[in-house]
Image 1 (spheres, helix red, strand yellow):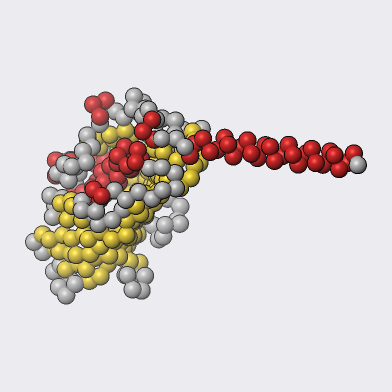
Image 2 (image 1 turned 90 degrees about the vertical axis):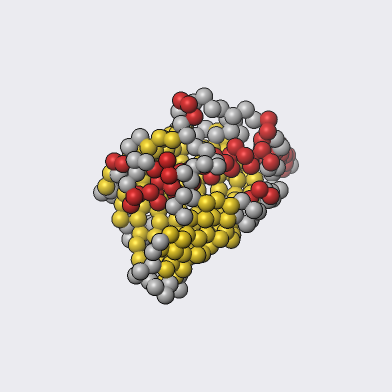
Length: 277
């Protein structure tokens, strides 16, 4: 009889503990992002890994495969952001360990003031060699996208409720090098919580599954589509993003002097931002 009483008491205390934990977790799901004060006075630094490969979209055979390791800093004076310690690697696949990279000195202290509407200007790439401008544009675009999710769309989210921003149904972007990108769909979902760098974070999943992309310059043209998805972890303490990942898949039909009849190319990209503690 005494054993039964002890067991019943233990089960009761365990159940009470679980209930208390559930209530503790529930308070985070009820947070209104608009009420969180964003901490902009500190420099935020991130380790960044960018990998991309060009493959045949039918056979999957590899054409090229490369990777970048870099440091990204934001919150600098005058609203500047900076890229530094940029290394380029030739790899066989995305699982390969990054070793013996070549330093890209052109990106040492690559600073600029991000702007969501005029970043496509060539002024951003004045000191970047032509063969590295595509990488520079990825740096700028990907970082702006992560900050945009955090600073523009996070306030519109409530836990477990899909959000479809109308502004991204018709958004069109034209870069001075001739590339045009048209957004036709995007979805954001606050799907859960996690902990990183000692802070409770909201897990935001996002996706966009069809976006026309094209380029037309003398001797080089393509048409295709981009789709992307990923997640970003935003602190419920200071509203800075602690971690972000995006995967992008682009299929184009390229026409050039080498491919006069057009060639299908599938580019796959993966980029990860991980905030330093």
